[in-house]
Image 1 (cartoon, rainbow, N blue to C red):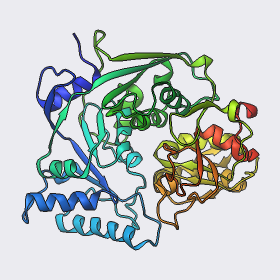
Image 2: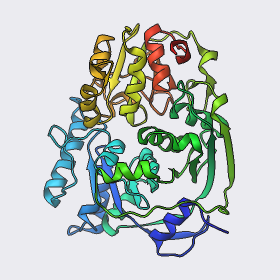
Image 3: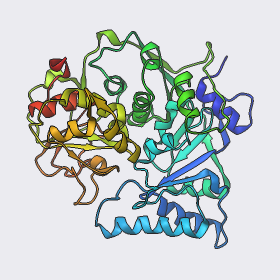
Length: 431
């Protein structure tokens, strides 16, 4: 019996020729990532458990991105960033991207890709559930708790159980009105938020490999919404070109064997799909946009690690071009690089930034912002009684702020169409 791509990467990281689901192994970690929410407790645990003269296993493999609660006057949030700053200064951490400086990058999951940390065939752990985003690069990446992260910080190793794999194959050519967000919402509707608990979600098929790097990251990003340990897509020439532009680090490409064993295989024909939403208050509360069309909105939000990438804004701008937003609409680039691209990328000679400004959108600074609520002064944060449509990844009560707000999750196309009308709108109405 052959191995899946996830099993092959974990076998390599554990120094074994072969691994099987359910087997426990020690993994050698290639990159540990943390940020301003979980970094301070991770550091505190590491110092406590490893002693006053604690040493980082490999400073070059530690990456720190303040990104969650950055543009706020909240003293606790500001103190967290200061703790990271002091730690980076004390231990001379080169891969620290400080807030308020030219090195600031924005959301960690997008910055990892942009800064060349996502390397095919490698192992990445991060103190954030959406670390699975990096699996779009043919690598194993997953979120981990502060205690496990502290152990990695001191040893470079972690004890893990090999997950079973599930495969999701998308056949056909993706229609212009669909995006990766629609595909992953469909999966979540089918298997629910615990349907892949502690499993690997592998994405395959013509439609998947026709996606841009940004769009592939949307698929793997939301694997955690099904409870998955990781999401993964085999690296191809598109990924290799992206990696070559950012780093000269060596890498190894793995592919699943034809006789690899999967717990389940789901197959879809994208030609028959239509735009989807996740209704309040769960990412698996699936419905078609058509079925909820006309729902009145108070706010639209285009941003986050899921929906704040360049391709997301290109999609949204195509619909917003020449139109006005009927309700407050927030545009939050996931990274500073994406924010810069909004000024460079054009449609009919007009920059994306200008298109959004002309439509009356509020363009915020790069960060996680209102995706996870945040302090009261967070831009775009949900307040009591609001109904929001968003490109973010979660819509649990209170996720974007008030527990008395309702959040619909959708693609950037659906959010842009809805912004124009002020009610939930099928993007096909604009095609």
